[in-house]
Image (cartoon, rainbow, N blue to C red; front, side):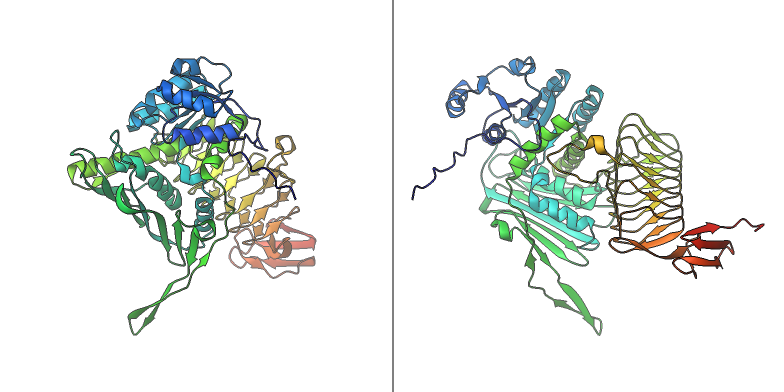
Length: 547
């Protein structure tokens, strides 16, 4: 039997879900070569740019047909290049990214985004003004295990987070252009900020300089968060063995991510508990169980994400604002290490009349935010969106584009309100509930032309983890039970539960269950307001006082 020829690892493979734009990789050293390989496999690589001619000769032989150049200006002046990937030394990132943005290119810059917050803020602002994609190479947010862990935390599977620690240890690769904090820790800071949904209010860091008087080879950083979580990060390139481990401890479960383990063992959950007997605690240990993951190369997923952002113009998962948050923490740790003191971070709200916008939130241009509204940690309000008065938007919420949120709405953590959804006044959206805007989504098929509108009536309450299928209306003052899946219109005042959701009763606008049949005839008083409601078949209405 003839054996098939082995696959060529350099053979390009076309991504199924995006139209492939042309990309130039600038900087083809130790890390840049991995980016070259992945963009070549994704059929996106047009140019390799590097300051070392000998390196370019070697890469030209490895990737025949790919143009190589020494001058960065050749990349900026090439109209075929839509995306510039910068993998040069960190000190060059800000200037090279700025030049690429001004040249009309979308930019993927390896971490860190820049060396100062001023530079990072300027880059994020410039990208917005130029309408360009700015993505930062925080690789772990493209790791299947990290995405699954984020999902578990958001769903409350770990309970309330208590503390997090991260170890990133190895023997080499030793650097002289940056210390180990700036080389290793950005990945861990990025993940910890994303899991907690907060910026720390203080940091404390210590380092050891063993190979060079002014370059730390090992650092330990402690991050303290307003919500009570504490996290520590231990990084070193002077360690006897490689370890890349993240431990997240909640009051329900604990999660362990070990990136050096094989795929079936990379992410484990432990349901340890503590039993108190006569005021004496006893640890009840759980054997733990692995979390099923789909193996994917994180860098390939990261590169493909950049291509998708170029093609769709959607903001990257790790955009300039996320890069700036990580940069702010890095600099605070560096100052703490240099001065031997606790560094406090000033988290002032963005200056906007009569409303509060947390510094980690992103509010794009052409967004109206009503007086008295609050937008909390890591939320993102996209363009052409109107937020009414007195609205409270929790952590990690995405709204828009082109969405209207009525006065007095409350949107809890981890909710996305997509284009096509309208929330009338006083709507409550529980944690992690889901709106859809396409009936038959496919990752490889654009359905933007098929968005269906969903209208949520005044005073409606949607419970945690409920799903609202698009193209329907939720009646005024209705209540959708936690975890329900709503697939059809909901009458005013109805109580819905189940999958698919069905009507199980009726509720007053004050939130009191009414003693009425599911359908038929009858009337009832709200026990609090004494308002009278009349049931007529499948419809309940509030009677005016004169009736």
